[in-house]
Amino acid sequence: MRYKILTVDDSKTVRIIVKKAFKGYDCEILEAGNGVEGLAVASKETPDIILLDVTMPVMDGVEMLTKLKSDATLKGIPVMMLTAEGGRDHVLKIAKIGVRDYLVKPFKEDVLIEKVGRVIDLKPLSEAPSKTKSIFDPAELLVVEDKPAIIQQITEGLKHTPWKVHGVATQGEAIDFCTRTPPDLVMVSLSLPEETAFTLFRLLRTNVKTKYTPIFALVVKTETTQQQQAQTVGFSALVTKPIDVGDLETKIAKAMNLDTSQRYYAIEAETLIMRLPENCGPTVLAEAANYLKPKFADAVDAGHNKVVIDIHLLKSLHMGVIKLLFQAMQNCRDLGLQFALVGNPQIVAECKGFEDTRGWNFFDSVDEARASLGKVPQAEQLAST
Image 1 (cartoon, rainbow, N blue to C red):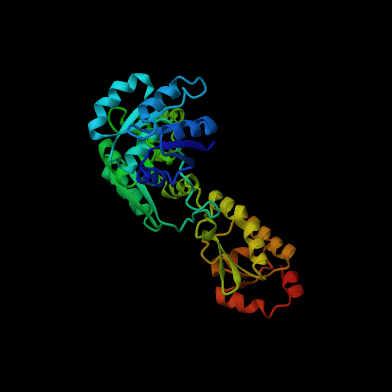
Image 2: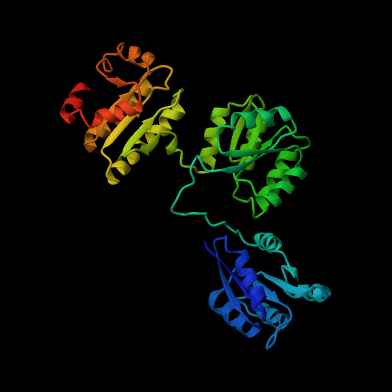
C-alpha cells in the first residue's frame, strides 16, 4: 500500500522541504497552499496523514482542522500541526480538537520523518529496483556486543568482503550509530545485561530508518530459551556462538538480498567462467546450482558461446561437486556451448577413481582452456565427456 501525505502550507519552500524529506520513501506527496485547498484535496484523495500549517491566508490551520473533525469521512485522518516557535502554546491549546502531534519550524528532515513514521508505515524505496545489490558492494554492519573478542572474530572473519564491521558495546551507542549512519544490517548479542537486546530490537523496529533493517541475534548455542524468545520477537536470523563465520556470511547475504552469483560466474574475454571455491559444502553447491541455468542463458543471450569450468581451487572431489559439474556440462550441450575444464593434480587423480569422471580432460589454467575452445570441434569435445 502506498501512503498519501498531504502537506498544507502557504510557504512553497516548506512544501518543497516536505517533498524532499520523503523522496526516498514509498509515498505520494499531495500539496495545498491554504485550508480551503487542503479540504478540497483531503476530500478527493483521503490522505493517510495531513501536515497542517497553523498560520495561512484564506483559511488557517485551526479552521481547517475544525472542519476536518466535523466531517464524518475525514475526521479519522491523523493531523500533525506545523507551527513557529511562538505558536507552540497555541497548538497545545487546540490539541483537544484532535491533533496527533506537532512540529516546530524550522524543522530537520529526519525529525519530520521520525514523527510521521510513528503514524504511518513508511517503507524506503529500493535504491535500484531493477538491479539487485551484489555480494561485492560495500555495506555497513553494526555489531552490538559487550565482548570485544566476538566483535574481533566477526571483523576478522569478514575482512575479505567489502563490508565494514562497526562494533559497539551498549544500547545507547547502538542508537547513536543508527541515528548517524543507518546500517545495512545489525547483529545484537542476547547476552547483553537486563534484556537490553530485546529492548534495542523494539527501538530499532519503531525507528523509520531501521524499521526494515535485518537484525540478527547472537546467542550461545546451548541457550535454547533465548533462541526461542528471539524467534518469537521477530529477529531476522539466529547466529549461534561459537560463530561459524562462513555460515554468518551466507546469512548476511541472504538477509540483505544480495546477488551472490559473481562468486561463481563471470564473463572474461568473451568466455563465461564458472569457478568453484576451495571448499564446496551443501550451501555453496546449492547457491552455485541456483544461478547455473540463468547465468548460462544470459551468456548465450549476450552472444557468448564458450564456457570454462574452473575447479582448480578444490581440495577434493565428492559426489555433490560431480553432480553440479554434470549439470553444467549438460547445460552446455543443451545450449550448444563449447566448454573445457580446469583442475589440479589432486582433482585429476581423484577423477580417475570414478567411473563417470574417468574420461574428463583437464587444463592447467583458464587461459589454456579458453585457447583450446577455438580448436576442439564440438562433436569431438562432446564425445570426450
